[in-house]
Length: 263
Image (cartoon, rainbow, N blue to C red; front, side, top):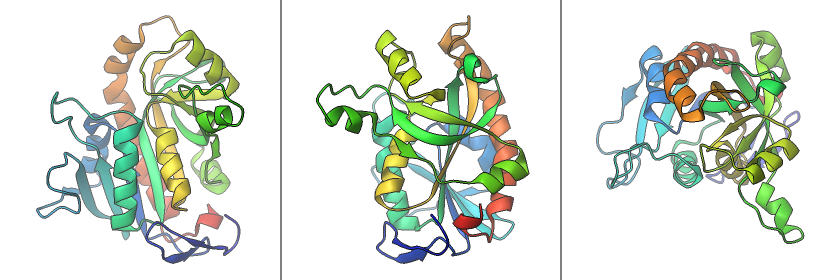
């Protein structure tokens, strides 16, 4: 967004790129990714009634940080199997419902990701996504193939990146933790530095509803390394979550009361 261009958000309100940021929505996929930040910011879980339908496992934690209203949402546990509801479908539903209910000025999709050593990623690095794309929506029909990849640019935040000395890279999203040869080919075509299981879905919803989005991903595993992905992912989850809980408060302090166009 440039200057004070008028847009409509998901609730149909007129908003402006020149408006000061006062409410931030943080979308996580996993409880273990979110809780260190929830504790760092001293956020509290919603009391009943929740803004979400009672039957859903979604959770919301809210509070203030340096005068900024902050909401953290996670899809919660699968009702049948009791594991985190990861993947694009749960997070896209959660993001839509949260935007409509909470009217955020800015969304931060935070979480973990695999990183590519060949692109400069290392365990514990926190990357800001510059672009979102999918690598597992293969539709080999003209135009539908581009729709499947679904490339979207992230909200430009050059001043924030420079001020906090953050790393940047393109993000590729798929619904599997592992990577097939076809996935690898498309990820390379997407020029991705990091890969996850949610980012492009959050970007799709944010783009539809014209809400600015930042994605911040901490690297848990090196995709092009020599260690098993699952072993690295589980072994480094706590380290990655700690990196996020250290970095995101600094981001919140920087964006507070600024306009999107000044980020």
